[in-house]
Image 1: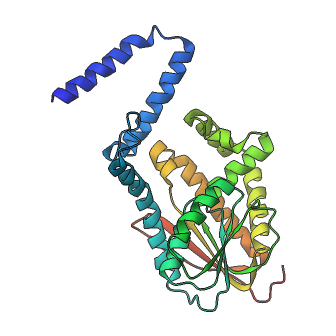
Image 2 (image 1 turned 90 degrees about the vertical axis):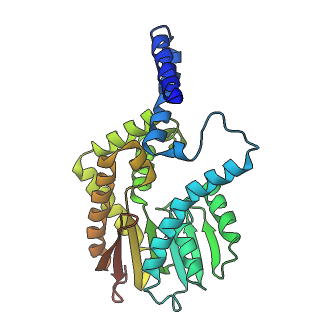
Length: 294
């Protein structure tokens, strides 16, 4: 009870200071409080504090790592559940689209003893280096190759399988940055800027979304061999859940489904859809016709 009273007293003290603050001070305080609310909503405070953290407190740093990694691993298990139903012995190459630093599908393929080549296509070299360093610790039997190129510019070897884990939001934000001249890293500097960006994206005319969906579908068709399999996974991500921006998650799902429909123009045939209730994720399976030359 004493601690609760102290918390209310501190909040009251902050409230009493607000009117006396300069515009800059108010702006900085707003950002700090906004971040605190995000942590409260995501229950991050159950694992750690964030301001007075002692960098030499190794037990806490390890707990923080596993708190973040646990979500990655849960998604990896969802991918394992999906991929174990596919015969991977005849698959030479798998292209993982825009994985960033999240080793979800890679861990699943490690568990399944995949022996082919896993290609990571991502233009964020720093994020990919983190992922590659992490995966090497597993001593997986597959060959891991990083392709440092833009999603739309890669024109390398076609593969037997495409996997895409929650990529639509990244592609939408990347497109916005390219067309508006904004640096991608700036989008994530503040919650306000990020929220303003996704609001601008969702406010664009439907024709813009439809044209972009077609562009993504055409690009994907260049990556997959005839007879190959493409698997797309969608879910409401940690950012959407933490910020309670469900409209963005819904928009990304609508964009994904529109893109999937466009795949039919390039020889892709819908195979099935499965759900993982533990992670609230949906997997869409497509096969590329052996008669397709596109």
